[in-house]
Length: 551
Image 1: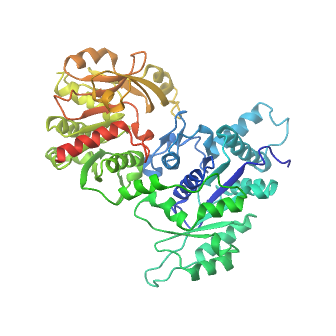
Image 2: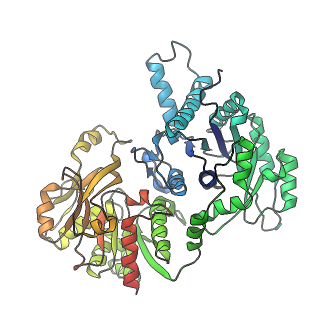
Image 3: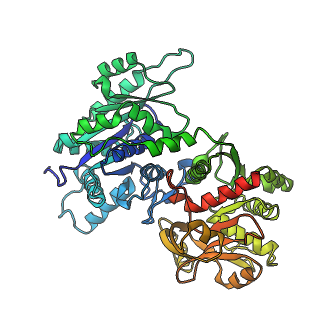
């Protein structure tokens, strides 16, 4: 194979050993953060080995949150962590699934793009992976690409991507670095940290023709010198290339922990790249300290449906919402106490909704389907009537409109056509362009997705929160406020404070401050734009209202 273009560009491949959930995504994001702090421009790439073309069709309970980019691409939640750690937006080229890769190869084959050759996984699919990585590097204009390969070493599904990385290393050994994030268990009965699983994982990676340059050792406790030496000898890795990564209270401590082991120096030296400046993590350190300290707490109840999975509570379904709450709370000098409230409980016991009075703020996030919907509407009504700060996101805004229509505007039986297609008062209806798509069962990547502009109305909470007249926010929905009911709802006191520039779509609904301290819903997903060092304006306003209620 010929040497590719962009040979001066550097690649860091992050792979996982021993088990899933070991922290590859946070390690990748942290490496990106550290290199950025040294003046090196980076792009972070996530490779997901599943055959879904994107993450949009997967159940949040099983896979976690779907994170939407400006481009409208529905991605894995790791892309959200990447954006939050880097403090900037990422491009659609920075995400890849096996479904995307194979779909491109098959489409090219159908168009005789391979000139009549027999198209095979090796080399054609592997070459498509390499070309996508190089294209992502070119589009970003970065110095270094940090690429997380999903799954665990030894998985059949991700072997193709490890091989693509091997070939890129073969083409230009000085431009490719391998980092293995592995787990060192401490069995309770032994009380001793065991290195054998990581040794086995490294040997398995060796069987692919790949040798890790750096091992990030995840464990409950810091790695001692003896274990470092043992890993170094058995894994053929220098002791100073083994980084201790003990469990920490906050993921935002991870870059700081890595830098204590001088990881940025280690990486830059291994790649032969000179730092453009000394590391400066002072702002990040100050933010991370807020995650541990605070002058009090604020209690936020999240009323949702994607919580229960067997005997466990899965908060990953709302990961960006949780982080956005944290960022705004930390900025106000308090720590959030977040409670997960299953909306279905309010359907079983109508009186249970009174339990919301103990919260300083209530939030209903996005979602789909009828499960728990009347429980959510009951929660929204209680928050409105009891003057508890309320924040509705996407579905949370739509149900806020339904509740207001039913109980204030006098539109008895008002509903969304998503749940009741035959409702006589369809205050929420499907977007016109979505009708044909659903009729054809065209579900994947077909919603209103990505960044769209929105104009704000003067004298509203939304306008004062943003401090400007026009904004851009990310969307993921098929339904909207029915234009036929806007006049009626407005007359009843509901304010549509944000609209699409053509005034066709209602983007933000709120109650005037004289009626309620904070009752606001957005059709878009503001949580996707919240960053540690720049919390989202609407989450800031919500948390401030919650703190005021607490006082």
